[in-house]
Length: 298
Length: 271
Figure (cartoon, chains in turn orange, blue):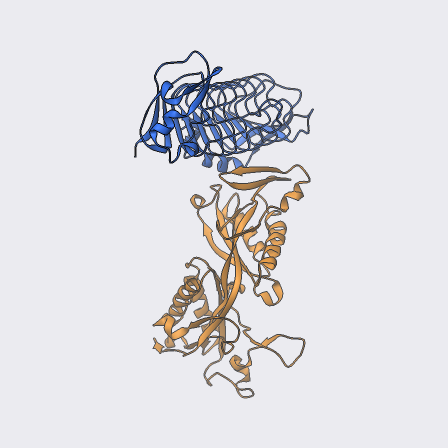
């Protein structure tokens, strides 16, 4: 399959089941909601070492937030329910509770309930106040700037992590420009995050390493500087490869995000140095979710 | 299916215990069976069809017409369904109500919604003393749900209240929110003496400055983030509380009762 001069490999991205949750952070203005959201989703690019994958889903209009203030919706993904709950709680406590004027609300009403502010209430040292409004429990925790309002719980749902595609280009600036275009479009899709810095990862990994202590190492088949010294997957003109990783609530959400992302890359086309789109998989051994690139773009 | 309607034929001299006439107890009964139910009337028992004309069929939607202030225990332990009272209601309206909705067009007597657990109670007139309170000797009053009173309420509203909302468009009598453990009482009108007497936790939300009390300490004026959410939850009510112009989030906060554990609060609208 070739779109606008860009070859779409007959391969698939491989993804695995994760647990996910969503939270809504509001503040006096969008600037401070975003600062808090960025802190909460910081150092959360990959479960390999961060414990979770997190990202900003979108900016919310005041009419969409529970307290009528500007807000930001964030999502956190982890391999299991326990690790997700732990990450959510520590991040909420260190990054939202501490952030001026912030308030924190559930972003998923259904699912298994996990603690959002339920345990942060103890920071109130006995001065915390509970309010049950329309069946939802809130905690008002006295803090130095006034009161931190948080919903007690949010929903945890089954989700999919690790959807991806690779952008193969003739130069590094061209690969990055294509990924930026893709991310801009993909951020318009709900229920997905692209957890790596700016949504783009330049250090895609393969499973295993020559060093016994490492579970993952550089994806040498896609490293352009190794074209002559390893079993490469790159043709000579490819000088740079970048990857976009997608976590989503459902397979369909990731499908949509991949479609608009790949389309945005292809719109730049061969004329802008984009040669191929490929994907990372482990022979189907890693996860049950397979995203066949040609089917998605059909 | 039309509402199951009980029309009072004439007002009895003695009080009537209406507790058998709740939705869950009348489901699947024929009109003749309902008519044969006996109600305590003073010291004697009378058949329902002796007191009321009975029409309609939908036991999930009960209407009591020509009601007056001696019909006690209407909607006692109601568990789902709706009861509409046309006229006044006696004491213990919605006692221990578990879910469902009761609406009264007139006034209600003592202990309305006392020990209510869930559901919605709307009183278009005035309510007597001990609204949403605990029965004498009991420690837990209302535990959930919403009470809306469009008129005034008597003394001790929310006594021993544990959870839920009591919304009063008019005035509240003395000892409003006394011995509250938690929950919210909102009063748009004036409040009487001894507001929040011995309250432990909970919120008294007031539109007008109450009488000064040595038992409450001023915590200053604040903009509280939970208030817009609380007011938003009132939006679906047919009430002044649903009116956007009634909402506010800036309040003077008083903590008390300091002679008790002092974790309660009186929030008074600023400006």
